[in-house]
Image 1 (cartoon, rainbow, N blue to C red):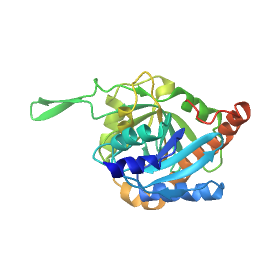
Image 2 (image 1 turned 180 degrees about the vertical axis):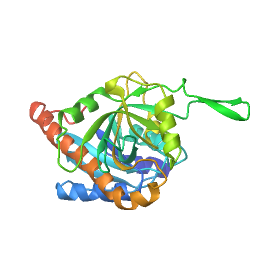
Image 3 (image 1 turned 90 degrees about the vertical axis):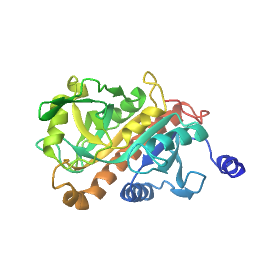
Length: 275
């Protein structure tokens, strides 16, 4: 217990935590910080390593490495609860890679920003003769933080290399290698309006639902497309994973540097931002 208190004392308060789950996500974030002159200082603690980025624009920022997926001791849910508690962060951005769902409209490296999450594991499965039926009607959208959505919409910049899509991200524990299952999710899950169109899917985001009530979320998910959840997924991501992670990290840091600087100029005495 004394070791835990001692490690918590080493934490500094921050406005925003960046969550990363894989080694590639961590490596590409570190490369982007170096390019932009932002520190990436590794610190130890009772729950594993984390990284201090210092002041990015007008925000105090740190990064945390989680396990893959939402659950388990090192998953995004447990890490979010712990690190938000010890840092008093008012925003969490889940960074990394995701799968796209519209290969005719999207391409590898495009950036996906969640206006909401749709956990697809919340479903009923029932016998139907020699097969079964899956009912997704209990799956509900969970809105992301409105201020973070506004921040990223305000600072999105069209580039020749990639596009930015805003909408609903699917979130669940499955690693999907099937266009049939991917398309079943698209067809069977509750459809939203054009602003809530399903744009992709990932694994860690739904763990963030543990840290704040639905009416006052402090999270958002920003990820680059590394694949399209089909049978070629493993072969594709060998080449596309770094690009997807890099584009997502660059988009987020550019937004924080741009918008955060405006906040600093307007509120020079404010050192902790409420999203």
